[in-house]
Amino acid sequence: EGAERLWQFKIDHGYWIKNALPFRWKLDKYSPNSLMTGTWDDARKTRQAEIERNQWQDYKIIKIEQESSVIKSFYLSPEKNQRPLFTAGQFITVKAMIDNKEVIRTYTISSSPHDTDYRISVKRETSNNEKIPDGVFSSYLHDVVTVGDTLQIKAAAGDFTFDTENNRPAVLIAAGVGITPMV
Image (cartoon, rainbow, N blue to C red; front, side, top):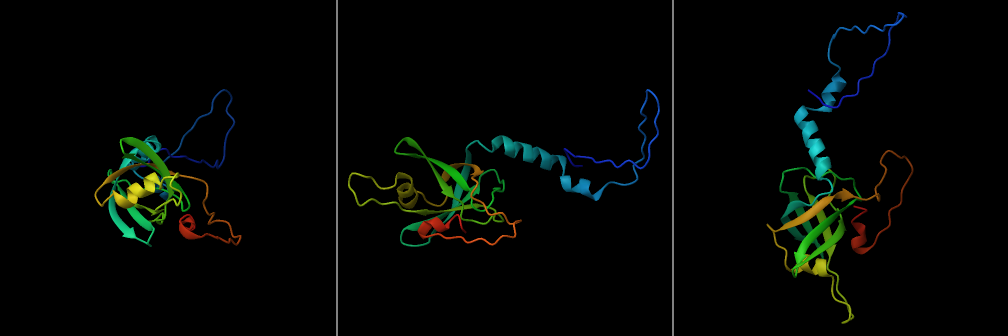
């Protein structure tokens, strides 16, 4: 089992043979590291996920929570039972048909990378100026979308991520719905 392995050899001793280089070995036991490569099925799924990464995928809304008077969180589950892969601070691109028009927006993921679903927390955008309309997508999510509806999503992207390997202290400052990338 295991696909796309990288094998590393350490030469114990060698002989110089003119015009030839024989290669002989005997398998004593498998390296425990080879088991970390997963199965052939895992490798196939990984390749398929990479192919689909920039394609629209259907996600079902499985839960909606009212976080405040103007913010709702939407929990999105993949219809293909694939676990969403992302790093904290990334965003997803969301598409919906609104008034017979394709509308696309990006929203920061507010769930943990360890969760099995995406969560986006969306503030209802309203305008005090009658010449400027309310937020088209946020109004759609707040007023029209219900549990069981489907949205189309592209895989997570973005560089606003926190390097957990770095020992430098970090200060994160946010206000309002801008807290979602910090979460």
